[in-house]
Length: 314
Image (cartoon, rainbow, N blue to C red; front, top):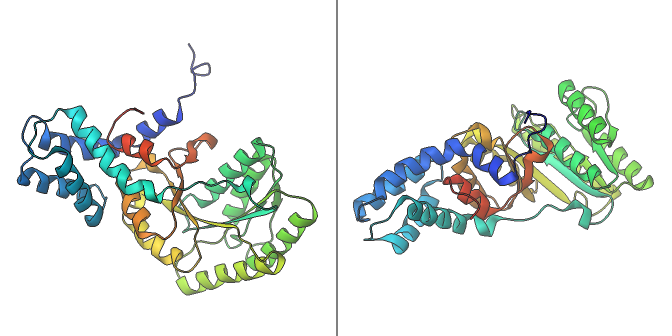
């Protein structure tokens, strides 16, 4: 069979492959600590250290270790049992932080604002969502609100054309809030279902960036008092615990309603999703493990947890 004719891998398989570096780092240490020996306190202390080293954070690591102790303490376990127990413990941390993203179920036009630092995958994430929505039959407008980066505008234009979505942009350095206002008025007048708005992500001057984001929100509310209906913070898993700092910068100012974690396939630090989920007031809604349109999917806490420890779908 040629590559072109090969069946496309399922999402769970792509997720598991994408998280393989994280699962290898986490499970090799954990399994070697516990398999074929009783789970004494020394082993549990080692587990907690391994989990912290895997970027799960000290609080989650302590709780997962306590759950592990309740499940397995004093027993001799095989590799499968250890992985199953670890997956269940991680899932218990993440299930309360799972939520859905469904812009087609809300009011029209449904306005989604995308925030995050440059390089996080924000523009690509917006493009993938646009393509998915148009594929479902929605009339979508893409707004290039990162007016300070010509490359971002061009990249988004390519995504919009590929998706068959409407595209709104202005010249480099133009007022992003004015663009957002005009775009939403046009979307209302022309019957668009969804409006996806990119924003700037340069952190050289955090206050200026936040002021700009808040201005965009204010002008959108002049057109629709409920807009934006969703504000997605896009985080790059490859930056590890720096993602926590980004969540704090944006989450407390930009009224974030959901988190998208991208580039989980490019890091051995996939565990960072756990402390990010717990530190944020906003839930995890989408995760990405590749460059393709289908590589951005709804967050499933159980599937993620099983992939993170190298298990199949179960």
